[in-house]
Every structure is written in C-alpha cells, then in structure tokens.
Image (cartoon, rainbow, N blue to C red; front, side, top):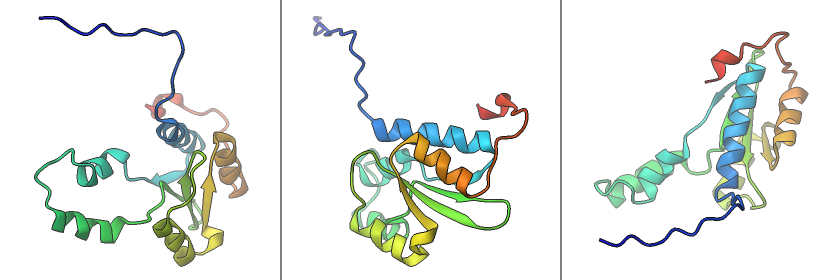
Length: 139
C-alpha cells in the first residue's frame, strides 16, 4: 500500500483565524472573570454542516429559527448587564446577525476583529483583572 507523500513546510498557515480569535477571547474572558455564553462552532457544524447525517432538513430549519444570528459570545457582567460580541476576522456581519444586533440594540452588540478590541470591550464594561489570577482555572 502506497501512501501519498506529505509536503512539509516550515511556514505556519493559520487555516482558521476566526476560531483562534474565539479561543483567545474565551481565555481572556475567563482571565477577567467574565461569565459568558457561547455556542461552539462544532454544534453548528454538526447541525448544518452535514457532520451528522441523521439530522433531517426539517429539524435543521427548526433549529436555525432559534439560533440564527446569535453572536459568538454573550458576556454577562456582575452588575446584570450584558454585551453581545460577534468575533469576525475581516468578514462582514450576515443579515441575520444585523437583525439580532437591531433587536438587542446597537449599544449591547459589538463586532470585534482583534484580541485587543475584545480586551477593550471588557475593560470598558468595568471588568478588571483579579490581583492574582489563578491560572489553574483556565484549563
């Protein structure tokens, strides 16, 4: 049995920059102690991407009705307010995301393209780093 030769390269290619941004922002939210809600991309892939062949089109449409436009993260702050954060790398908001933004209000929704912008959003909302963060809880 012959295996195809793998082409090796020292050049690092970031195939999923948005998923990297999402992982970094989750880590930062934990570091700042900000509670958040997030639907993992794998859930979307299973339901809509064909990774799970037994989900019918009818069920996909029903699920889409409820999760369409939901931002990548919903940050919940200690004083009771929230901020919906859509993490995008160079791409624009889809129509359903614009509708979600309109429904929650522009002040409660922000599009973030970098980790620095995410940190700025958290700090603007009053979150601060704990004096001695326990990095063991970030696993």
